[in-house]
Length: 131
Image (tube, rainbow, N blue to C red):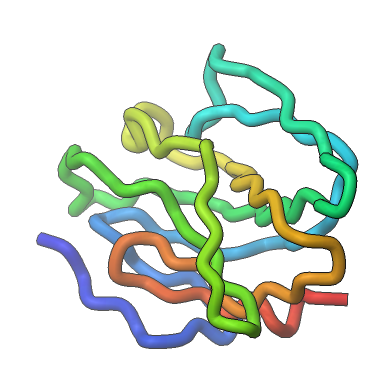
C-alpha cells in the first residue's frame, strides 16, 4: 500500500511506498559519483560541463515494515523557473538494506535554483537548502 504524501515537505521525512525518505542536503559540485540507490557497484562519474553545474541532492532512506518491492521512477528536480531536471541515478532494489543514504545528481545551468525534489507521489522542498 503506497502512503499518500504531503504536497510539500518542510524538511520532515515522508513515506513513499513503505520507505521513509528525508532530504538531508543540497550542494553544488564539479564532479560527482553516479551510484544507484541504494549505493552499489554501479559507479560512473558525472563531470560538470562549461556553463553547467551539478546539483547534488542527498536523501536518507529507511525501509519500513509495510514496504513491498516495487519499481520506482527516477526522482526529478524542479527549478524556480518551472523547468524539470532528470537524474541518471536509479532506485534499484531499494529494500535490500534497512537504512541508507543516496545522492541524486542533476546537471543544471549555472545559477539555477532548485525548488523541489519529486520522488513518486512525494514532493520535497529544496528552496530552503539553496544557498
